[in-house]
Image (cartoon, rainbow, N blue to C red; front, side):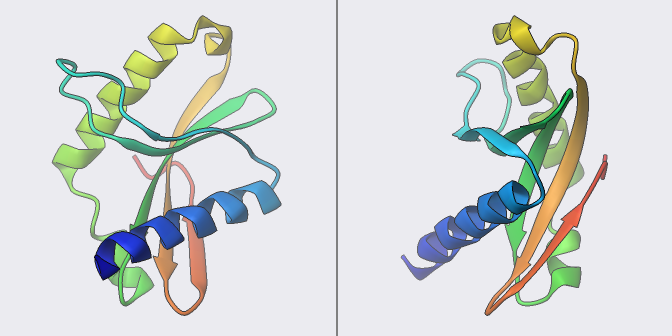
Length: 116
């Protein structure tokens, strides 16, 4: 139960951090649909004409969090992003980027842009 609570707290902190950087949170914990073989996207956010698909990772160190996103997970998030865009044509003219928000408690946040 504690891991789940820590994960929810980390995702909340990541959303707050992105808002402070000028992003508007479009959606959180998005599952694009069964049968798409796409994974959950932790945060989808917008700043001007840019949409980011962000994965949130919380570990004991920022370095461990940075290495916690597997190639398989990146591919599933990419497929989920493609499905999301196909279902939301209002974002068709936007640029897209895949980011990571790395969290270490008690309080350390790092936003890595364009990580894959």
